[in-house]
Every structure is written in structure tokens, then in C-alpha cells.
Amino acid sequence: MQKTILIVEDDDDLRNFLKKILAANNFKVAEAADGAEALEAVEKFFPDLVLLDFGLPKVSGETVCVKIKKDHPDIIVIALTEKSSGLDVVHGLQIGADDYISKPFVAEELIARIDTRFKTAASGQVEPKEKEQPAAEKIVLRESVVLIIIRLIFTEAIFGLSVFLTSILFSYLNPYLNAGSFSSLYFIVLITGLLINIGIVILITLKWNCEYTEVSREGVIKHSGILYRKEQKYACNFVEAAKLEQSLLGLLFNYGTIELYDPALKEQVYLLNIANPKKNSKTIQNIVSKEKNKPMPFIVQENKQE
Image (cartoon, rainbow, N blue to C red; front, side, top):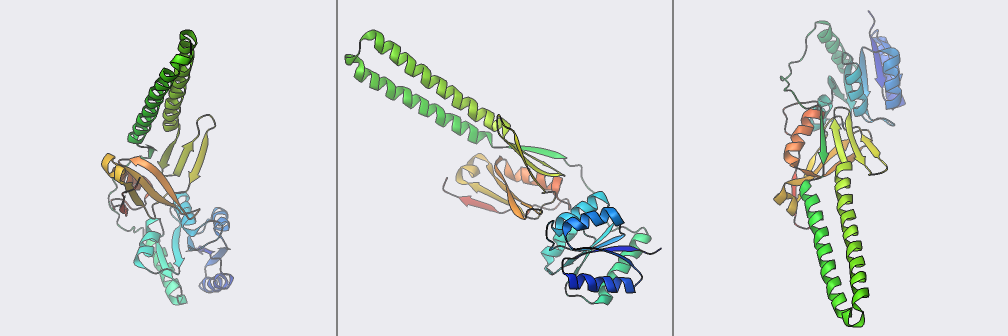
């Protein structure tokens, strides 16, 4: 039976070159010039194999690879990349690619890789994988309670200082005021300050409760807003890089910032001031990483200034 191969490459000359090679070797060929077209072509042609360039416009090749392997795990994906370092190869395999070939390449090498993959799939052979341990499907992360307590202590200190300074001011003004007006004015100021203090405490508590981040296999969702709820979604369904940053207080009270990478937007995603960041970074990796039981490559940075 004739196999269908989808070529996903934004370089027109290279795409046409690949099309001629594959057609000459009796393959049925479909093509796409960017990531968005690739996802549509997969659903339209249901190819047996995808030759996927990782440097695509619109939707990145990494995101396309993850989407294909999630929705159609039987489709073989061979990554076409100009990057040939060990880390780039490992990264491509971690997010689901079955094989890779570095540009430039010769036609014979490409056809040999494709034939080998089809023979392996036909024989029912699968590459050995490590036994996966049960892992959490989702984790909810909030800002460290230590920071909330620090803010509440600071708020109460400001309130106490305000009451103290107010009492000194009114004792100074007492000779110029009659007893009745002095008492009522002092009571009004004290109650107003107390209400403001209570409002600030409630606001800090509500903000902590309403602002949190959910990390799942579908990606990262940041929730914010108290009255007007807002969700900001990121496609971090695998870990490309992570960095752990901790200030001096963070080291003392065990909180820090975890940095992930969004392959779709090609930007960093920061999980700010998370409690127990080392433990949570391992949990996050177990949820979003394609390769289990590998340490997350974070770097601890100490910053002595708050």
C-alpha cells in the first residue's frame, strides 16, 4: 500500500526538492508551508509520516510535533533541523519526534531513515521506554504564604504606627479643643483608620486566593483578578528549559520563581514566588515533560537584594 508523507517546510525550494525525491520513491506526498497549514493537513490527509521543520512561521514546529503525537500517536515524525547539537536532538526526541535528520542531507540518507521507520512500525517493534511512575495530572500553585504574612505584618505595623502618631497629634491639639469635639474627632479618625486597615487585609487575602497558576498536561493557565476574573493561557505542555531564581529571603523562607518556556509564543513563562520551588519544579516536570525521571535543568541564583 502506498504510504503518504506530509512535508512541512517553509522553504519553497527545499519543499519542492523533497517532494520530487519522495514521489520518485513511490510515496504519496502532501505539503504544508507553516505550522497552521501542517495541523490542517494532518487532519485532512492522515499521513503515515511527517517530515517536520522545527523553524516554522505562525505555529512552531515544536508545537506541531506535540499536537500530532497527542492526537495521532501512530504518525511517525522525523524532525528536519539545522541544529545538530546533542541537546537540540534530545529536545526534539523528548517532545515526541521519532527521528531527526540535520540539514543539509543527501537524498539517500533521508530515504533510508524513512524506510527504516516504516519497517520498524510494520514489524510492531517499539523502542524501549522507562517504566513510568504515576504522576499528578495537575498542580495548583499560589504565591508563598510567607510573603502574604510579611505583607500583613507590614500592614499592621503601618496601622499601629499611624494610631501612635495620631494619638501624639491629638494630645498636642488637646489644649486647643474642647473635650467633646476632641473625643468625637479622635474616635472618627481611629474608626476610619481601622476600616482602611481591615480593607487592606481583606484585599491582600482575596488577592492571594484569586491569583494562582494551574499546570497540567494541556499547558499553563494563570488566573488573576478579584471581581473581574482573567485567564492567561500558555502552551507549556513540555519543558524546554527551567530556571529557579531565589532571593536571600527566598532561600531563608523556601520560596522562589520557576521559569518555563512557551514553545508557541517563544517566550518565558514565570511562576512567581512559589513556595517550595525545588519540589514543585520536579512535580511540574512529571506533569509536562515527555521524558520522565530526568532532573529538571534549573539553576539556583542567589540575589542578596530584595
